[in-house]
Each structure stands twice: as C-alpha cells, then as structure tokens.
Amino acid sequence: MKIILMVVGGVVAVIGGATLLGILWLTLEVRGRMAKRSEGEKVREVADWFGTTGLDEETERELPRYLRREFGESLFDEGALKAE
Image 1 (tube, helix red, strand yellow):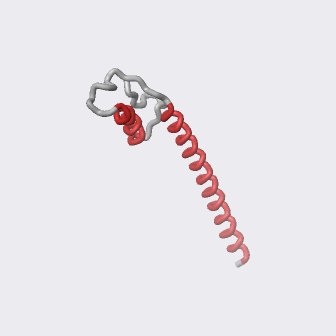
Image 2: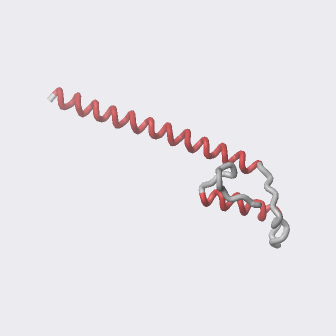
Image 3: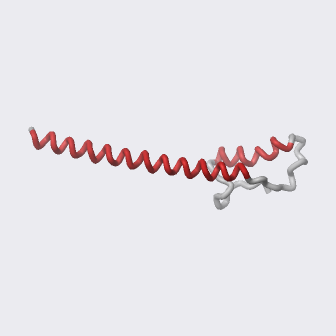
C-alpha cells in the first residue's frame, strides 16, 4: 500500500510540475506577443490608399491593425498584413 501511494504521489508531482511549466511558458508567450502588438500600435503606417476611402483617418489607420489582430499577426511578423 505504501509503495502504491509513493508511485501515485510521484505521478501527481510530475503532472503538477509539467502543468506549472506549461503555464509559465504560455505566460511568457502571451507577454511576448502583447509586447510586439504594443510596439506595432506605435508605428504610424503610410499607404497610398489612406484618405481615399471616405472614412476618417483614424478608422483607415485602424483597419490594418484590426485585421492583423484578427489574423493573429504582428506588424513585425514576416508576411504579415501591411497597410501599404
């Protein structure tokens, strides 16, 4: 009985450790993506079509950022959507 409890305890400890490592990794990943997104929000993109859609400038500039958020992209990702 004592051996079974030790084995079960060891398995639970391994699962708990793996879970904690997974949570830590996800936390770091999310923070990194949020930092990249925050930096991308500060960039003022230039595009020929700005001012030609009939929308106000703020809405036109938000459109590429909105689409990148929907696609899960950052301005700095290779192949990401750009306003140009």
